[in-house]
Image (cartoon, rainbow, N blue to C red; front, side, top):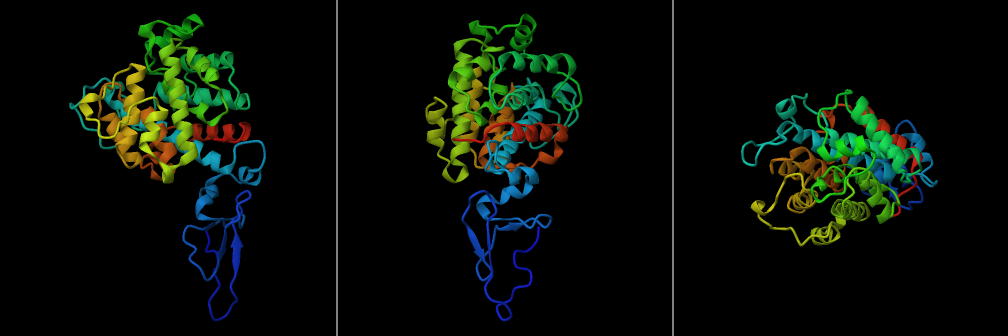
Length: 353
């Protein structure tokens, strides 16, 4: 990045100014004013104000068409933050999956453990979420359940959407559903296998019925389908408000929960039941003040550590942004993840929260 006014001094030059190049932003910076937070791309000479400075990290072609019928630069940035947020939370939890609460302490990214995977490896949670995103990208943000099933089967059979082609964790209900070509609808089929992959729908105009259909590919009981609807609504609220207007009570209400602030940890369950995972994720989000705190709290709840942290991490990624994710560079398969996000940005409509 370059300085906005590299040669300007009070004595030699009149006051200079630059406008923000983001879409229709009208912000202007003058050389005799504080330009903290303004950035300038040395390759394109485009300038962005503090509100839109994340656009500098977006591929140039996306910046140029941010007024078109596809994801804008700002949309892309939020989506990337959400996807990284889930993937990192997932990878943090993988080594501890099935471990009871208070038998370990997660303080950072490590490897091996429960599944003997290298540090930074995401699990089925993120693989199926990326498959969902890929299907939406192939259909301009529209839900096609037949194509979703094809993508999920490609994951479980061929290792698609994994960092290295290895599938090491398949949920019971998910495995049965993909094997029988329809979702499971019994009460005991209300695991969190649909919730963990549903996040990309928050970045589309999918209706509640669409969300339920996506859940029902594997988890067709009403409890699971409704939990996915509540989660997508919560993610959309965070997308719309951002960290500056984050209201924990409103977030809990959107998730269909009582105010979770101050609820003691012993009241929070962290197994595989979908409603427990939704509650645990929102509890972690509303009782912490950063992405790091949120995902570590989620992992340290124990039991289904990867999924709890993946679901919480997706929400925290939206709220706090990619720059607040301390382990983004420790994640394996980053090129694959970023390629899928960029594909989505080129092929999905803009957000209208």
